[in-house]
Image 1 (cartoon, rainbow, N blue to C red):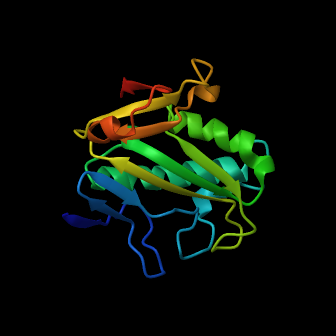
Image 2: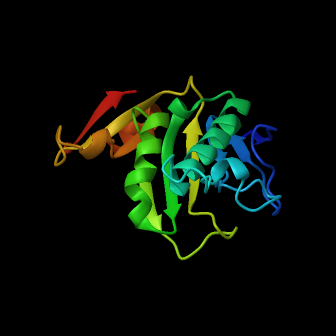
Image 3: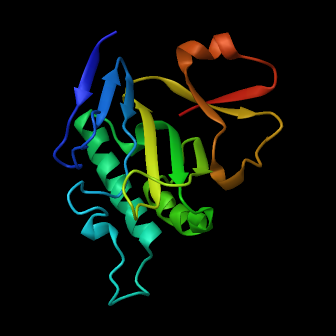
Length: 181
């Protein structure tokens, strides 16, 4: 399988020994991103301005900063955030979830499957969230999978999984439905 390392000036270069993303075949694995510019800690544009405490929150500014950087990584690979098929979110305080989710909805009107967990800390002090995304190239066929038990009541319009069409036959069962994306 062909692998291509993705590098973009549109997102901060990590200090540690890893790359911004890897395209393996049709799948893009973007490195987890935090709201750091790796120069000043939390990037200035990801911090709430103390002079204007009622205009946004730290979690919203950090989430927006991270998702804009991840968008740059995806674009460098010829993808967009609409091509995300799996997301993982690591938050230092789940009390921030409601405000985080407001920003998430701006970037994902049709959201991908997501795992959200609370962690005790992140690599850079002051960072409140890390986001890790996996996507597929725009031309790759895929289907949204919803369990029969969830029916049409899937919460927050989230799907329960996305699989490439070629894998669908291997995982088919009577309790799942498939919708082309």
